[in-house]
Length: 468
Ligand code: HEC
Ligand code: HEC
Image (cartoon, rainbow, N blue to C red; front, top):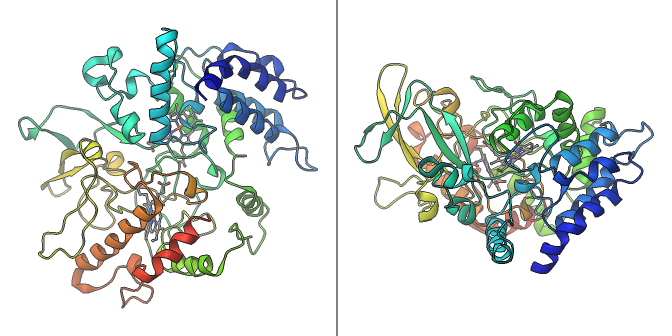
């Protein structure tokens, strides 16, 4: 296996080139930057080249110009795009073609070990996933940073935000507000499958920018795939220079033809064509899975709603804090009315304490690994639940049986852990409901707390989730 990867490197350029015969782009595929990391990636990229063959009478590829799809494919895996000096990273280094276009901690660790092994024989061996900007010690050691614990143990990438003017970080040494002007949070790498249908969706607006009706990134701060690609090139690949609009458009075209499976692709086509009713992308379900789908519709689809499973359905509001952050909340009442599984120490250490000055001048302190949309707005506190603290975009769930672990910080290892988390989530919502009145996320009739999955329903729900 290890040999295949080392030797596969050489073969890969030829493999990609072969896949592109007939597209007029073989010269581009010969460029040295397009070396994929290993034989398996090269094979996956070759498979993807079929997306650049016209599939319909309109001569387009999934609604995109075929040449743009192929160019986008090449850019996505290009480690040194022409005219754009960079740190050698391609999109595919994190959104792995062999891992459903995401990155699991297991793969990050495997690649780290492989790199150490290769370096024994070849001191120049490299894997661009490991760049100092994503090392834990980057802020102290800069370009010499080498502690990749967050990447290896948690599969997390550094994302840096300027602090809003009313938000300060607390210095752990002094317990006083620090002079820091930005904060690093650590986020999981989401899949880019299905992104054609998981951007802004035009419904259920949130009261504050950015992107009141949904967007890209875990916090929906980005409106288009072009803007997203520009951010990734700047922040993850550290490009010097400005990518051309066509470069960004090509990446957009390529990603818009990536789907979890053919059924999701048909759904997307039907949305484009305005077909009603829309086809249901679920596969054929067993009776148990059918039962699970009914539970999903009651307990989950108020947030994971609509055909995309990512649009909260009014009166449920758009952005939510489901308490996936670390540390998890702990009940102050004995015996506790809800008990989340605590975060592992390797995740808990990413938490920071913030001091937020609210509109009325009051200061509050909160501790989390990721304030979510509050980092974009500073809008924290009242009126709840429409503040921005730790609020994230509701992700789509297609294909997720193969994209473990889950949540913005990869804090749920399995789908069973996800369900255990939501059981406590609903208990907490009930425990904290003002006046005992259930909020729309927890009730179907405005009176009863009747959305939470019951213990006896969990096996069916899990069986359904595994088929998505
Ligand atoms: C160093 C790892 C890394 C690289 C390289 C990288 N990404 Fe990402 N990508 C991430 C992370 C982490 C996020 C989530 C960031 C956030 O929410 O703040 C993300 C999010 C995304 C999303 C949003 C998906 C959604 O459902 O909202 C898209 C699209 C995307 N990346 C495309 C790209 C493209 C195109 C490139 C290459 C130009 C690229 N990425 C390079 C790590 C990476
Ligand atoms: C109150 C709205 C809400 C409800 C109810 C809800 N979710 Fe979520 N879900 C979210 C949000 C927001 C996130 C992103 C949270 C994060 O990453 O911190 C999420 C994330 C997830 C993820 C992680 C996806 C990934 O790729 O990492 C899964 C899986 C999931 N939800 C499944 C479910 C299931 C199953 C149910 C029903 C038992 C459910 N959700 C109910 C809002 C909701």
